[in-house]
Length: 134
Image (cartoon, one colour):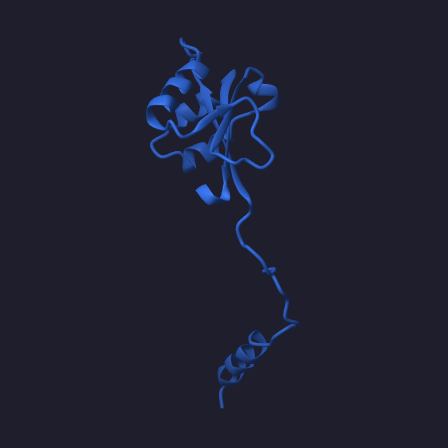
């Protein structure tokens, strides 16, 4: 009998050993009462038109069922989006790192990823959906 003939079955026996069973999924619904998503659009250069107004027009035309609100409800009953401009991007709402943008941004060049790091303004949109509309 060769050494490897003993080693492989031994490794299989140890790798199949079971520890204590743990419950990872609790009972009840697996979906929360609502879903929330935040999306930011970083501007470079500074936009020539008011992004909030442009967004309101686009939403009215493309998705009139999406309600624009100042602040999303704690438990939304309708699909809604709160939106705001951030003028403190460098200090408090920095864009993703350059390397991440290059790796995950389809069609984004390294030069564009570097340029985003110099943004001063961002339009932040907070979406909230009730479970029945997910």
